Length: 195
Image (cartoon, rainbow, N blue to C red; front, side):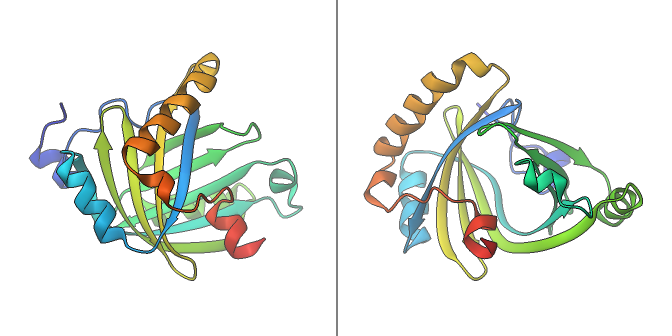
């Protein structure tokens, strides 16, 4: 079970994430919901463990000037979380479930470094995000500017051979959490906002 820690709280984390965000692949399902409060209430009744609450996140999407990464199905995002001041560099694709992230120390320096390597900023997405853990899954409650409210259920792994089994487990857990009563969204926030 995850534990609270003063050290983690300075980074905006309410418990140790354990292996929740470790892996090269992420299996996720996303649902459009009208009322995040009812989903949060249901998670709390199931003793879901809060990981981060009330973060405002800015996702800055980066590409090379010729757009070759996006054209190849690769998406690089620099994520800035406040008030925790956590910074993630996230690389998704080109494979469907491929997702690698690394913590960075400073948003401004990271963005300056990436720009010095030739990356340019393509677009931004702003959202408020709460993350809960339930068993080996993480459940993300998002309020996305210009889009509305969503819940994502996800799990990560390094083992590509486990992806079919994990897709089944995510489906089963989505049913247990009653998320399947909401419309499922198959597009990313980037695709929904920018095509």
